[in-house]
Length: 113
View (cartoon, one colour):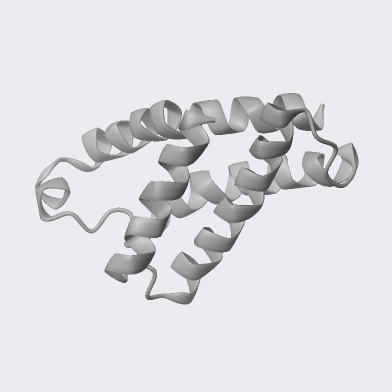
């Protein structure tokens, strides 16, 4: 539950800061909210929608996060990151995804399957 709160707090902070300017970033925010609902259902052992829906949400949102994180300038706009070689930047992005979103997708997977 604490992890879910940390994710929500970070997203709300970005929202207040105005980080969700592009339509892709706004779509990422909506997808994040949907995955948080699934994680909340898993944590509280509450049945929200059907497991089939959560299977689609799991696969779709995982693909979305991977693609959006590696392609989008919304995530990779740090000036220090631009100075790094492309391979190092992609490796750091992958590590960050696993560490930050690994628990989310683990819970969503357990909830869906």
